[in-house]
Image 1 (cartoon, rainbow, N blue to C red):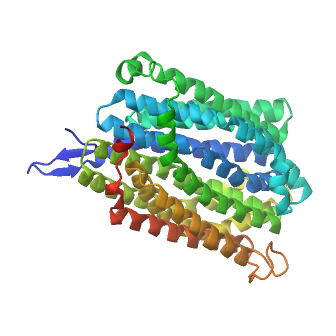
Image 2 (cartoon, helix red, strand yellow):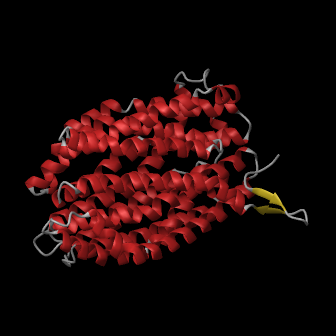
Image 3 (tube, rainbow, N blue to C red):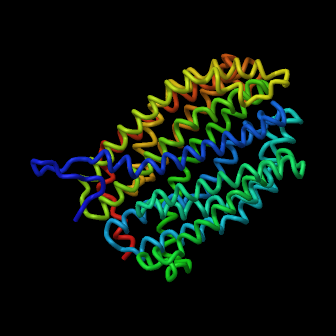
Length: 471
């Protein structure tokens, strides 16, 4: 049986085919680069409103992302189940996993509706400036209403990636981005909805991506090979299995993102310029980490397919290779971000805004610690994705949760706030502002990357057998 990304050299020995990895990962990198472009497009449109609007986006962006990630657990598991089913030549099982992820994602709508209603109560404890809080809520409420569509699309593209159809994943992402630009212009400025229009524009674009993804899943070719037209009904047992694997993935990414959300909210409290600078740098670093997630996603598929084919030794070898590629890519991108930051950052702040110059100056300062941890982020993405392909998700989730809540968040509080400014009395406070927060994020990212790499190297994932759960 052929194994993913394997070639036989002239001496008859199996070797990792780097060209095969590149062919597989390139559309995923392009897909995630498109997502980075989507983020930058949103940032550019919001930057046309004001620096306060950017600060509001900074305050709400990661809180919103945390909710989406935690509730998207079943969708995260789709790629793992599909890859292992594809590796063992069970096409109907693969499509069943895709539909289970989609239906579970759409079923989160009542929870998102509750989050939309609870927005003011969720943000109130952070004591944002009234103008920034109002703008943040303008974006939050409509974005929560549309989030399940994005999760459902995510689940379906996990199916495409799991079977190796990465170009299809790229097509869906590309259609979403192309729809996002006119949608933002129409809702934000055509209907004069401002921040709320940015959210409705994203919702409309994701609706386009969802409809396209469903149409492709039901296309005659996929229906013939994977029986997609027969497996669309929700399967309770499959949903439970995917939640068992997927919820820890959502918790892991959610803990990471919630820590970053609190870090941004701390910085927002120090001033709109620092908050805007942080949002700008996060969007800049997305140019590195989103394509790297595309490479890492190849690791999830290849590891899952190798395990489905019954060769865990090859799963370890291909996983190690993808991890190294992730590290090398993000290290290279860190240098590019440092080199290009001075020219790119001013493009996203309105020149007529009085605080624009200060925001750019702060952004150029914090770009240094942001660049310093990129290679460790590559280690994290590569290792976590390989573990995900093997179905090893619980211990990584606990590790991320502990590092985020018991290291990153308190360290950010200590380094960001001046005495008397923080949320919790009694903690030491260095008063470094945005720079302190980014130093805390750098420390956390380095430890998280090393922790995931150690977990992968121990080989505990070899004992996990998702196949037992299918019987």
